[in-house]
Every structure is written in C-alpha cells, then in structure tokens.
Image 1: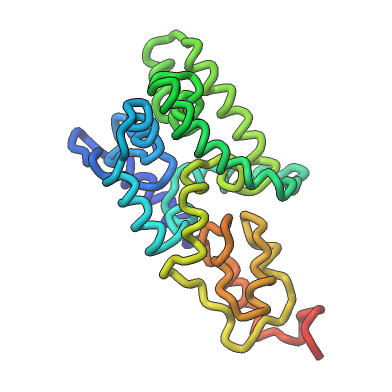
Image 2: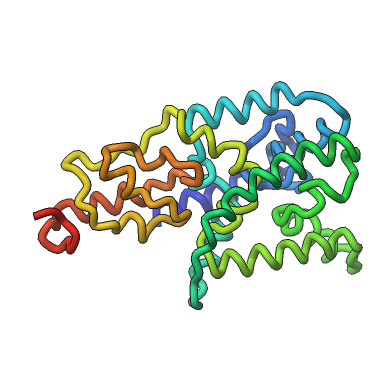
Length: 263
C-alpha cells in the first residue's frame, strides 16, 4: 500500500505542469515528454531524436547512467506511472500466466533496434522507432488528441493496438511490459548489478520459505540470492520494490510456520 501511494503521488507530481517545464532533464521512467502536463523529458524520446540526427546524447545518457548507478531500477518500482498502471491491471481477477524466461531478453533488442539503430539509419521520423508505438504516448498524447479532434489517424491506431496488447499482457502477467519490452528497463537493468542502492538480506538468515518469490512482481526469485546473503536487487529485472524485504520482515518472527525452514 505504501508503494502504491508513492506511485500515485509521483504520477500526479510528474504530470502537474501548468506551463513551466524542465524538458532539458531526462527522467528515466516511461512518461511521454510530448504530454502537455509533463515536467521532464523521456530519455527514450531524446535518444531516438539524437540517433535520427546522428548526435550523441552525452547529457541525457550521463543523467540516466548516473541515476542507474546510484539507485538501479528503483524509479521503476516507486515512481514510474506506467508501472503503477500495470500493477492495477494485474489486480483484475483472472487466470495468470508466467512468461518464458527468454522473453526478458526482448527489451534489449527493443532498446538497440527501435531506439538507436533504426532511427540512426532511417531517420528520427521512421515508423521503426519506439516512439511510434510507445504505449505511454498512446495514453498521454494520442488519446487526448483523438478525444479533442474526434478523428483517429493511422499512427494513433498503431499506438492503440500496441497499448491494447500491453494491457492484456499486464493483466495476465505482473509487470510484463517492464520485464519484456521496456527500453528504459533494458538500459537500467545492468546497473542493478553495481548500483549503490542495496536491498538488505534478512539479518538472521534466509528460511527458504520462498514467500519473497511469490510476492516478487518481476519473477526474479529473490530467495536464490537471499539464501546466499546477496542483496536481492542484484538481478537484471528487479524493480527494487523492496517487497521481498517486507516478506522477510513478516516471516522471520514466525519460524515455526515456515514449511521449508531448516530444522
């Protein structure tokens, strides 16, 4: 509940501009900077723009890398408004599914191809760029435009189609977009391994109850690292939500009720 409240407040704060803005600063969460209410720039939009004009985004990339080295993917779990939407969608009662492990590698292909290579060789306006299919842009830009104009363009239909697929996946599998398709997640994921932010393992040792695995929204099996006294956020797809740490806090006082606890 605490994280949900923080996510809601973050979404309101990030989209509360009444005119002033700071689009020179990249905020590494999925939020389109073409939204009239957005304060900050989307790093993916900046990278696509710079790639299309054969320029290197020193400041934008440096900002994202600095944040990633400092806190890893913490913003994914606590600030990203699209992450909040996925969390809500996954609460819809239905049969859930676990995506194959190999699908988590797709986001790196999305980052390399749709953010850097295709815009570099085909130009910023190419249809083969992430911005053309971005589900956040569909919600924040395309939907208000359609409501205001009363007409739907082909570009908007493409975005809505992608958004529809992402919504279905989010309902079926927790944080599926974060795990499989998000280019920001792909950029920040390796930095989880070296970030200064640490999710501390339980002080008294892991009980192997795997409660943290059941609570993990990105299926990174934190128990495998907790049992070896390794910070659970040392995983590529971890969104540093700290849910595994809370699971340990609620489990440790109840050793007798843990079925897999060592004798």
